[in-house]
Image (cartoon, rainbow, N blue to C red; front, side):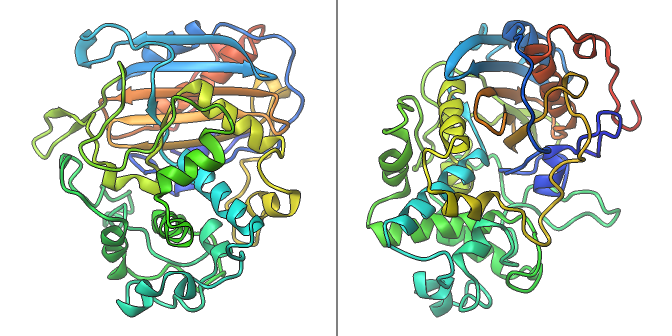
Length: 404
């Protein structure tokens, strides 16, 4: 996915993960937020438009203003080729790298409790990574650097880029639904890869940072990550339908959409039982539009962290990716905001929210393609359909993707 110059916004998928396609577990943003227009449109219509995008099997979404729902929507089907009926509009879905912000919040709440400091060194917090030589320069890498993807630790998730410069494929077998991988196994995969920079030098997205942070949480608290997420976030925020799968082949509870991914022969295969070992702190949480929106609202409104700790995540640092193009984004420039999202084999989930936390639109699309650029563009348009119903842009603006 490339920059969308006509709308003046950078693709949040591209700026966060550094690549199009099936890049896992993004944490991303798209420009500063301004006051939103007062009107609100039809979430069901937005999901029907999204479900018509090539490669989308099914779509669900929910929009919220000041904590109140203004609409839920569902379109497409639970299974491929129109089978399985419609996905319930309040269905659970994998949120991907939106998990990272939740994990980061738990880490910083532990900082607030005095359990660790943001400048503590990885080697001190997780001695195993130095004892087994799993992370180069672990005695120099800080919690702050891992939170902000400036540690230089290579990513375990994606293969090296192809010779033509295009993104490499996923580095593991996405059809292995049962092997019980541990977080330490994933860290080991990254060890042979070259570092991406000096500790603290520059931004370079790496899922390994958050796999390690999840291990830090568990070592400091003596509890598994799922327990700490419930204690700090899911319970207090009333996120009653949100959980972290921990054992394969645990999947998504209740009726939900299934995603598909082509195997080596090009045959689409159901990847609904995506291995829980590949998610964890880097992107394993399963949630709903309501619950994701509740978290984004509380985080944006400063209800989870004191300002000094919140700025550890929100202040822009040297080498961070640009915040998103800087021009008008939606509603002919009246509405701007931020996206977080995540994607891996068979799904894409994204949440739009305004900086003041007053508005959210959380969406999930189950897919039958590797390239997520079309579905992501469909989610951008969904924001306009919901929050700019009087704008002709949502209905008539042509795609501005290169080659379209």
